[in-house]
Image (cartoon, rainbow, N blue to C red):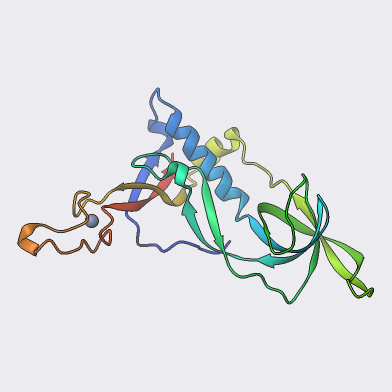
Length: 205
Ligand SMILES: [Zn+2]
């Protein structure tokens, strides 16, 4: 999996063995680790809709990951990410079969799914009446990390780094976004004036 996030975030630790009675944050962390284990979801630009689960598509590549707005508040746990995608690679067309119906038409995007090549070839008829063959992709559900496996891998010493897990007040400017009077109230270089920074979380036993 490509590393999608710059590595200059401050880093905090989350020790699963030290979690007390309030398991809320642990559930968020577990969900984020599950999603990381599943990998980066894919996106496709629709060239043509064939039915609500069959599409001619061009693949796109994830280029960056952002914490979803629902989890971007201070201290709010991550656990869900959205991705920014590149322009579609229009050199190869695929026939995509989705698991559940989409409502996408030509030019729109189907995103956040996982798909594999089946080895099958599908044939469609172009607007000019020509027969074309393209490779078939089928949406799959990635295997989900179970809670037992999560715990046993942690106990065995495995760690996960959740990049840009949450937003926290900047420790240099204390959330002001600018430096002190003595420093001429210059824009804070650590948070670039935003007053908050993305924090990476290291999950360990
Ligand atoms: Zn700052």
